[in-house]
Image (tube, rainbow, N blue to C red):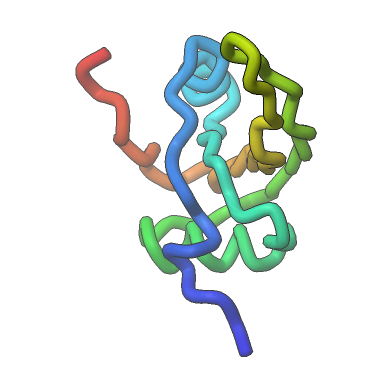
Length: 98
């Protein structure tokens, strides 16, 4: 049973580095499900945004320990995906007015 596409792609990463990569390398950055594979991410982006994907790179991040007063806990683990679009594809616009 496959995971629905909207559960694989969680949200776009809108940071200075993410927007720089978007403009220079024709790449968009998303937070994705930690269990998602590169193939699943590629298919989800193609189905949701109706674009062709040239490649996907992923990075796993381990949650850090954080304290607030006497209580302490860990941030959750998460996964980031760099999705490179095909040359002739129009860029996905999710951060136009920044």
